[in-house]
Every structure is written in C-alpha cells, then in structure tokens.
Length: 148
Image (cartoon, rainbow, N blue to C red; front, top):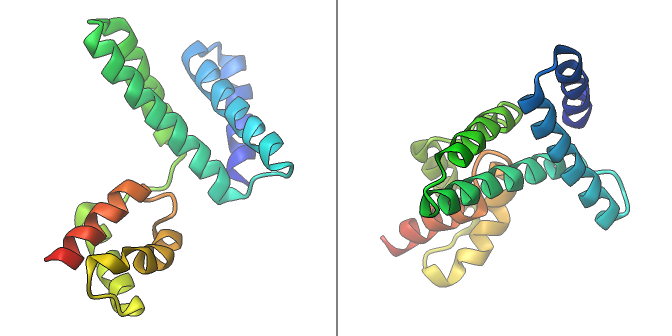
C-alpha cells in the first residue's frame, strides 16, 4: 500500500471515529500532496509524498515559533499534535551518528576533501538520506566533516 493510500484510508477512519484533529491534519496533508501533483502534472512517487509531509511538518514548526512570539499556547499545542500525527507517516529519522556515518561514506565515495566539493557529496548523499534527514541537516554534517 502506498503512503498516499494509507493517508487516505486513515483520513476515512478518522472521519468514522469523529477524530477531528487527525481528520483535519490528514486532509491538509492530502491537499498539499494533490497540489504538488498538480504542479508536477503527474502523481508523486513515495519520495515525493514524503517530501510534502516533511514540508508540512516544517510548516508546523514555523507555526510554533510564530505562536511562541505571540504567546499563543493553544496554537502551539495544536501544532505539536499535528506534527506528532504527520511524523507517524514519515520514515524514522536518522540519529546524528547515523547521519554522520552515511555522510562519511558519501564523502569517501565522492573522493571529496575540501568544503568546495560539498555539491559533489550532496549529489551522492541526498538519495541515501531521502525522508530520513533534511537537506539542511545533511549539508551541515558534510560541511563539518569536510572542514574538520
């Protein structure tokens, strides 16, 4: 079963159980997926769906930051609950140690030895960490390893 199908089935389940938080969260995620499919003019593959879900989680983190500035604890709690729901559909994220190990392997595979070659390493690394680490996290680790 594809991730998108699982999201759709779980949303229908939430409708039946009258779980408004899960229903609304999944409905928004599915809308974002459909919008990405319209922009791409073709259905998204699993990696594309995961990328959309990661973008939705990132958006909720930004909402939390804004809500903290506005002192809105209700919005903070809602966003945290939505993040928990969405993260349940994402692959388990790499620990910093796991990410570093994968980055070291990518550096070895690319033969890079200076920060100027980060792009070469990232081309190799990103498919390996897809869905398990963000590009920002990966580039920080690669930069640290190449500088050190």
